Amino acid sequence: MSDEKVVRLGSKKSNKESKGEKNEILYCSFCKRPNTQVIKMVQGPDVNICSECTMIAVQYLILNDRMPSAEAQMILDAFWGKSR
Image 1: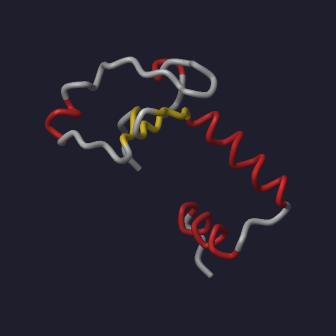
Image 2 (image 1 turned 120 degrees about the vertical axis):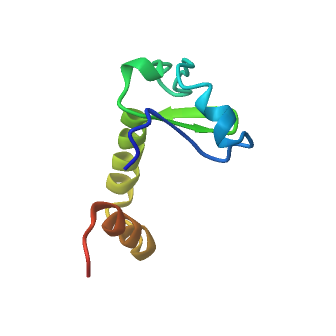
């Protein structure tokens, strides 16, 4: 896993430009906390989500549906390093 606090997804900026913004303060679009107060921040096009809000969303979706789809379960297993 990356040690970077902000993970940029779908960014049109080059890596060179992104490195210059390392100390940039970003706010979660959901809870409004800055990236200085959360574990990680994922930055997408015009939206940010912190790791805590991501966990809440994932837990809600899994509990609401009771069981992830087979495809989602494969992704979860790959993420957590489980092999079938």
